[in-house]
Image (tube, rainbow, N blue to C red):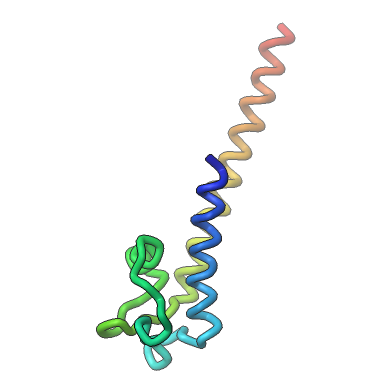
Amino acid sequence: MIAPAIALIAQRKKLINKFRNAGAVSIDTALDTSAYGIPHSIFFTKLVRDGILVNTSTNFFYLDELTVIELIKQRQKIILMMLSMTLILGLLYLFVSNL
C-alpha cells in the first residue's frame, strides 16, 4: 500500500523538477511539452487539475511555484493531524487498558 504512494510522489516530483529545471515558472517561460517529450499522462493531468501546472496555450505549460508551496503546506498539516490523532488514540488506549 505504501509502495504505490511512494511511486506517485516520485512521479509527481519528477514532472515538477522537469519544469523547474527547464525554467518554465511563468507564462513567459512556458514549456512546450511535446518538444520536451512530456506525455500528458494521468500524473500530468492531475498536476494540471490541481493548478500546479498551468496551461497557457496548446501544449505550453508552466509550473506555478506558489501552488506547489501551498500544496506542500496542506499535506504537512494533514500529516501532522494524522500523527496527532494516532498519538491521542494510543494514549487513550493506554489509559483505558490500565483501568
